[in-house]
Length: 115
Image (cartoon, rainbow, N blue to C red; front, side, top):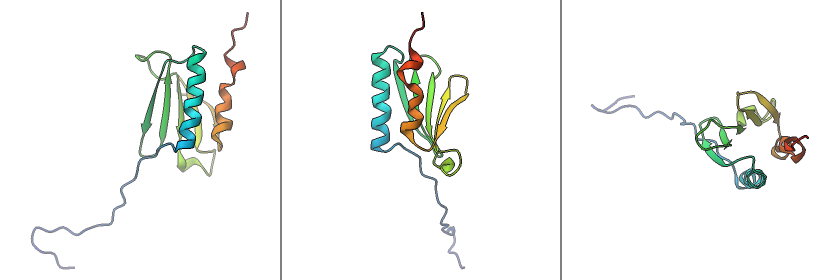
């Protein structure tokens, strides 16, 4: 392959695209967020589209580290499932293939005050 002076060969390097939530997934996440805000458990959220994951983080206070992170990692879809919930310390508390099943972790009975 002959190159002209100052030219570089064009390579077909595939630049990884970011992972995002689709409309249905985002709708489920925002419904859950609204329910938890109404119950007084959460106050803020953030959405990140990274190279290998989409992350929905929820906060008790905006100045803190995320209370929970709901992650979508398509590379893990064939193994443990693309969806996971990470608690404040980084512990994975739920993992699965279906977002609705994973979000069932936040059932109301888990957050009721026991007297």
